[in-house]
Image: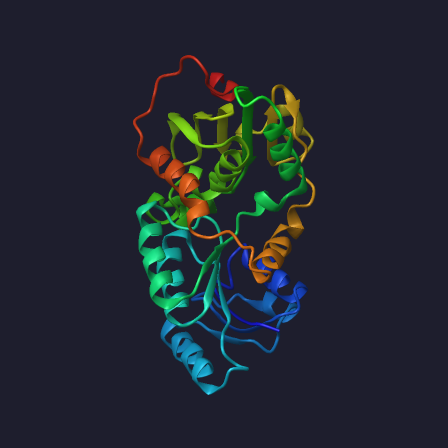
Length: 314
């Protein structure tokens, strides 16, 4: 049994990490969040110590690590706001623990270089949640693409609309300096998936990027991709909206819909199983996706012409 601590226990994604820790037969012994709305802990680890101040959490982790090998923190799960991931991973490594960090790993690719140096200094590892890489449908698609002619370029449309209320733009998620913007906050794991399946990125054109939506064109070794991301419910197709849906997800490859909506709830547990078996995805696996979203965030917009996502025609 491994001992876990968690940073960001009150966030949206934290319960998936708590479930994964429990499902893999391990123990959450300490958690930190400046927000004390963390009753969810009782559903998984009611005996865990909880802190709202980093300094007290730091002291507790240090105390556990000095007391005995059986109480030492083995992993620190990081579910904090995006802009804090870098700092919290550094804390984990310097505390003698391996890190498990939620996406996006960092906001800029050069942050990866610094973390790699700390890995070398401490002998500890950063593991990352790239959950789509362990999704059976995505693995099957990758295998299918690899078997085809290497010169084949597939035509891909990626559409992901996950509508959010007015709170979204008032929270840290609406601050591009803290979240990295729409493409980073809700799209980075899709961009990682595209790289995972279709190879190295060759071109990155941005057609739209604002507070609630982003869109553009990506070209990989084996694919041409038109993509559209949004948190605006008005972008959900009318038929789905009338049926009460506030989310729309679609990936088509050469006109064929890829069905991967099922199985999302267990992907964190699957990721933890791989990490605990020594097969977790590390820092370098994140570089292409982080570079992709950093470019999208800073790129000059290109006028609509050639290949652009059909939702932009609205």
